[in-house]
Length: 386
Image (cartoon, rainbow, N blue to C red; front, side, top):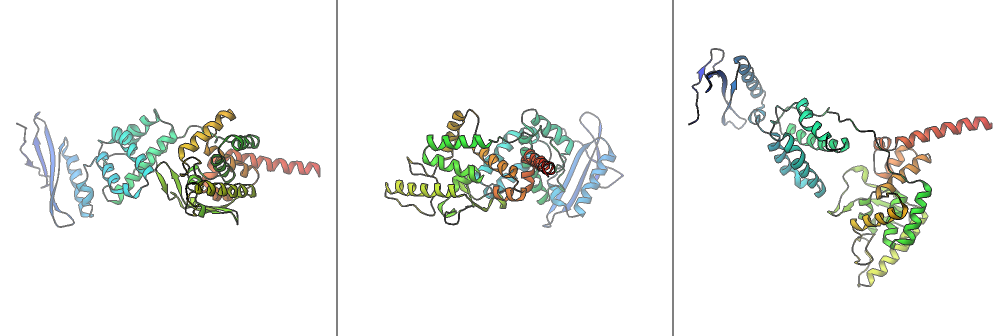
């Protein structure tokens, strides 16, 4: 039979009590009745306080919150991080892309819940969060990865603030120091030309066409896979980005900056015209016609949209022949670096890549610095020659 102590009213406040615990020690508790926003009678209790002053302070805090209309915070005071993050996920998952759903579900399951899931959301402070969540993660993951986990948690906490479960987000100013930033993997012009020569001679026409498109536009892998003929204006020499595609299917870009129309060079226009004719011919073999709503890059074997794993293996073969690791993002970095080093301004490069100038500054700082030095050298050389 469980021990049920007798509650004795304190002289300090009518809602404050003292009792003798099972171990013989004196403890303090509070019990406060109130009406919620719907007029329903509720009761908020707390016990186990070793000091009457501490119990009284907590009672006053509850009364203050209720007087300020914060009954939701009072009622959810004991909600754990794990309980809230489940509610947040279930309430929002339909609004997220499939890839975002999977990413956040895994972060909740493997990082958030095991480390801080049992802690109370309302009482979790910044130092505890850093000690029990950030520090252990940094022992296993790179700082850049831990920042991702931290960002997801902050989004969930912001939602709790919006739901009035907690008053504010205590974790917005938590800083995760990065390891020394690695410069992006970039090819020089000679290496890029060699890669394109290998791709043209050794790769199927679709692989070569998509590789050259990425190299000469700097678009992302998913953006290239998502291109439809309606997005390609061969007459005016432009490509419009309005989607991305991977193994989870086609979807809209995540940011407004990703929606853009960029110019393409005459060589790429010529290649895409040739590729369009080829696509039309192989589709006709199965009695199908090329449609403006159809994907640009298709498999020569299945006539289906070119798959993400097909592109992966194409770059794997190229890397082996080049003797250096080359990925789609390598070509994107190379495209940006060549433009910047050639003197193109940051804002223009950002617009072309679908990024913000801030991202370009952070990612390609070394190239921009080199370009500044080059300008200084040109000025000094001009004075010498003058």
